[in-house]
Amino acid sequence: MLIKSDHAMAASPSVLIIGAGELGTAVLSALSAHPARQGGPLTVLLRASTIASPDPGKQARNAHLRSLGASLVAGDIASASVAELAPVFRGFHTVIACAGFGLPPRTQTKLARAVLEAGVPRYLPWQWGIDYDAVGAGSAQDLFDEQLEVRGILRSQTETDWVIVTTGLFMSFLFLRGFGVVDVKGRVVRALGAWDARLTVTEVRDIGRLAAEVVYVPGGIERRVVYIAGDTLSYARVAELVERRFGGEWKRELWDREVLRERLRADPGDGMAKYASVWAAGKGVAWDLEQTLNAQRGIQTQDVESYLQEMEV
Image 1 (spheres, rainbow, N blue to C red):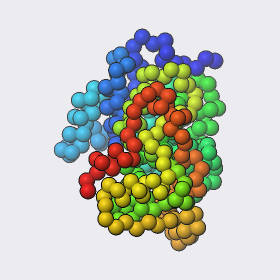
Image 2 (cartoon, rainbow, N blue to C red):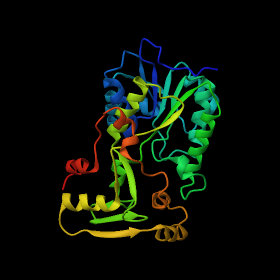
Image 3 (tube, rainbow, N blue to C red):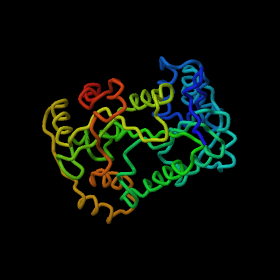
């Protein structure tokens, strides 16, 4: 059976965005502003309690989403079943999953099955991150095995088109103290695995822009993994840029695989150590800029050096 596509559509497809955190809002903003958009409704899925909340902060966020042209629809992806989610998804041409952190295990496989049951023509799953195929099963971060399972579910069928946007590390995560690479407050820069090891990072606004590009200008992108990047650089280069930007004395530390194994032996539930261990292993965490969608289409993205310039000293 032929895979359904938006190539022949005169109007832009209807899009449902699951979640409106940092990523979901960036994706919505980019979709709303994309020059190739020809109408086509935008909808954001939120918990009913979030939509109806009297909290001024939540009301303001909901108003911002509406100001970007989005309608709000209620649904709880954590608690709802496949049978309950499928009717919510049905009728949308494209579903984009932008919620993942902190959700119960099996949520992403449930979403994939609900999308297929609903007959959604196109799906961009919660796979914004590293190359899980290259990482493989049984990595230090057990949550990544579910990501591989999602890929298997999507690859096993031909009714729904899908695109996985592989972003590398979110740029802000590089500076998250708990992750460990750059601790601005403690003035420490660490390498995961080795100083000459590389990692790919992308700023969330650029992730949104390139997701919108995939939606509105697919250009033959169907049933495949695409790579994007803001920067691919070594930990040594990260340290150099951080030290240049902030000045003063900085400590450099190496967290190699054995150091991280010891952390996990001491605390097997240390989620950040699990993440760091995957990056220290060095598989699927970096790719050349030349192979990215943004490079191929001449779309400029933010690199680490310019991101640092926006950070307060």
